[in-house]
Image (spheres, helix red, strand yellow):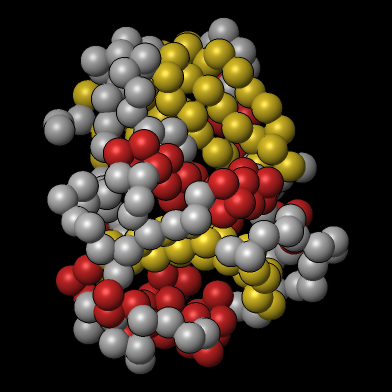
Length: 246
């Protein structure tokens, strides 16, 4: 699927927590097509394109959802916030990225995300629940604080409603309040790579997708390799834009 440049419209902006906002974009359906796990680039000016994971699966209606972390101290973030006003028109380039759902695989999915990396996993989960409703999914969502799990309720609902979905919330700080109840909902305290290293896992049987900073992704990969993960079944955009030198 080759990348296209197009104009779309901002139809909704909502605060998902004090630091993350959701944006809904609308454009021509055929031009907005993408695969689960891909990203788009948003034009700030002629020299600046900013990438964001697409947070919604392809529905054929030209609607795309984004989850954007707001960093007031960063110039690009402030400029982007000003651009993202309802009814504004934006220039996009999409789709991008090779870290996409392997629809031919039946292997259980292990999805690991930090912060707004959840948006990429959300797309994959929603596509799988629609296309492969019995495929096993294990979501590990890491954040520094509890409030940073900005769509915790949605992740909990997946685990409560689908017997093949498990939600592992991972926070470096203690929980501010209990998670939703459910036998497939659990909390782990610590850094995500350390949690994975001590957890009882069999990642060698899974397809593993990881979304986060390069340091986070490679730390998780190292932890999983101690447990025998099959490297060829681990996928991340980081492998393309920040490959290891060794």
